[in-house]
Image (cartoon, rainbow, N blue to C red; front, side, top):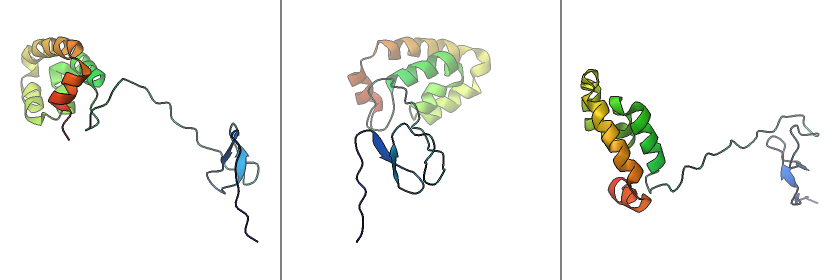
Length: 118
């Protein structure tokens, strides 16, 4: 007779042996394997179809914009390389500051239309 394990709301399956254990258990009592915790996800808001996020682009533009990091993130590799080539002039940093303000004031829908293509 084969047994199919069912679990309650406060239970989970062991990642190693598949036994039903308590959801808060750090170590499986049956096999002794430490259970992996789910990583904490940081929600930065809506994500476009291609996985790009407006807030992430804003942060890249603010902190690493002088090196073109936001351009690389948005898939504009040619412009990112151009920013890298001229980063010593600080002109890309000034342009990135302007783009930071534009991205910050842009709505999520507009961002998705402009940068959200797969």
